[in-house]
Image (cartoon, rainbow, N blue to C red; front, side, top):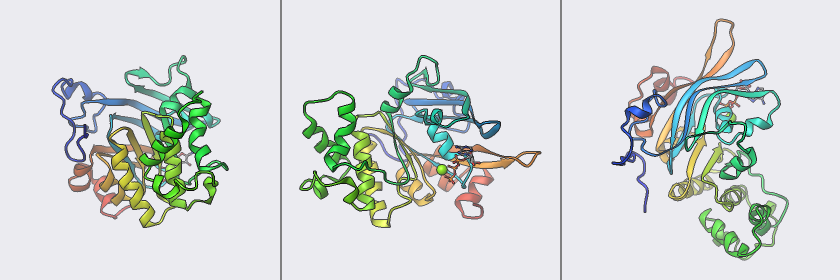
Length: 290
Ligand SMILES: Nc1ncnc2c1ncn2[C@@H]1O[C@H](COP(=O)(O)OP(=O)(O)OP(=O)(O)O)[C@@H](O)[C@H]1O
Ligand SMILES: [Mg+2]
């Protein structure tokens, strides 16, 4: 079944009334019937420095959620919380709560490796392994013990990433021999080959030309039929084109002159880009700031 796209947020009759979500979505997430993550009062520290403060938002299943805002406002920091990548940064810690399907993502018994299997990540710079195209895709399934049906898995992942036709005759060639845009689609294929539920993308197109960017954007619409996507982008047109919901972050300066990232406004993308409710959002999207 095709999931509704932008501007037609899911309204599920069985869904709890919107009020139940208000605790988590005080910056607005109307019609968010099916949540994957609920973030409540999340702050992230690097040592003593509180990089991001009090983020509260919910992420809808099989939706594309965009995070926008000026450099240094904590977008990547928040994104990395969704699959516990910040655990790998010495001195980084979080306070507040993130639940994944209602379970505390940071509970001591939660296996961070399993979290990263279910919640994959695509980085700004394409980073294929120095292996063949085939082995790049087969790597994750192999690590997970898959021995049979690898050819089919590789083909399916490459098809889903809209790369199959370009590489089907050269699967043994190095992933590094591909163009930048192809490498990024290879990385997306590698991520989806292990069948995650969520894909986190941190500026996945910033190293790509407009044609490669358009290909990835087209691809994202298709991927959102099967996956929940959270994307950080500096490109506001991209956020407006691809996402269902947009979160606008900025950085406030406190009494001591220290900057802390904050979520200013979170809403349906159409709303954010046409009638934002906060002046700071309006200034940013109209180019008066940042
Ligand atoms: N590993 C780290 N150690 C210490 N401070 C960090 C680390 N990573 C990020 N920060 C700080 O946290 C704040 C938020 O950084 P972050 O990278 O999340 O911002 P961003 O919104 O993704 O910016 P950009 O748009 O430039 O990528 C910044 O002040 C940054 O210097
Ligand atoms: Mg960043």
